[in-house]
Length: 498
Image 1 (tube, rainbow, N blue to C red):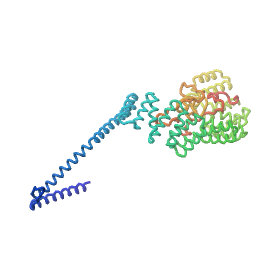
Image 2 (image 1 turned 60 degrees about the vertical axis):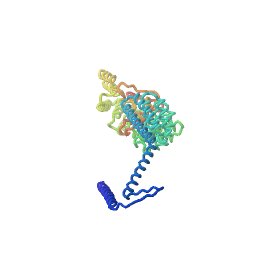
Image 3 (image 1 turned 120 degrees about the vertical axis):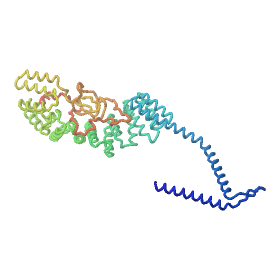
Image 4 (image 1 turned 180 degrees about the vertical axis):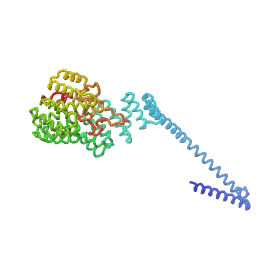
């Protein structure tokens, strides 16, 4: 830049020197010029003639610029007005976004209307209007704004997402599904879209379509690998149940084994696989499947199926079988409780007390109701200590809630596991755990309630925090039969009596 400035200065000096030289030359050699025209004779020097010609050229140039300015004046005026309207519209958009941040939906909507009046139906103005209308509960106005976005090729996906959210909030899963499929054709790599489509297909019972959706998401890496793997296990479980209903036991068993491998933290999947193997007379394979599941998801239902697979009928044989099963996960609380139940049935008081004590030491706050009932039974059966038994029964009354299935998305509790949450309809959100204080587990069938899908949502719709975590960080859920729920407190009864 400095060199350019020097060069420009030198050029100006050269031009000035040339002009001075020309002026000096004309002054020393004035010459004589005569112009004869129509009887008129004009005589002057060369310098004056050059100066007159230069002045005439300046006048002509000035007139040309004036005429051009007059011609451009209307266009410049329109441009300035348009620029002024654009600045005012952008200011209205900014004020609208600030109003949304302040949770003032009415002000945001007014600013959105002003922005549309100044800027027209621009995508940002339509989006602001849709969000403001949604905050005010005016779904029809929001739907019109999103529909206008669909008409533009560059904002079609944005409008589809808004309409999908509107349909889900209204519980219109049937209307949301074709919109999600249309959006997938535009952006198949969107993570929220893969999960939304999977959620809608699961609610519709289209498990084969859900399997294909997960396969596409895996190819495009639209979902975290562990989340996609866990979802696939749940989908294969449902496909296995469908094959079982169709009478194809071999295919059902193969799908169930894959489901158990993909989602090892879900005991219902392992129980389903074990039941299918037992139905085919493959008791050893069923026992091995339960032993694998016990490492990650120990539960009383697995223990019951294990006794059935091992053919243990006598109390001592049942206790020995459960000792072998518990060895796969010896530090689990459920392992101690299972052995204690079997030991009580076999009249092995010392063994029962040892494992109940170990289970009590693992309780984070207070012993569970099931443990208290087992201790009461032990005190009454071993030494006839009715006073100690009553004390344990009193503790059972105020014991913490029994573990059950808790939705990681809405927090609702359920007595049975199923792919969809009974309360919010979330897919693969139920995990075994302790329900919130005072909450009673639900036993209702899956609801058709919709998961909210806010347009600027930070989380993925239909996926809970529990479902998004790696399977290794989730608590193992209990098992249930295909037709009957597994009661959370069923473990209080001795295994030998079930």
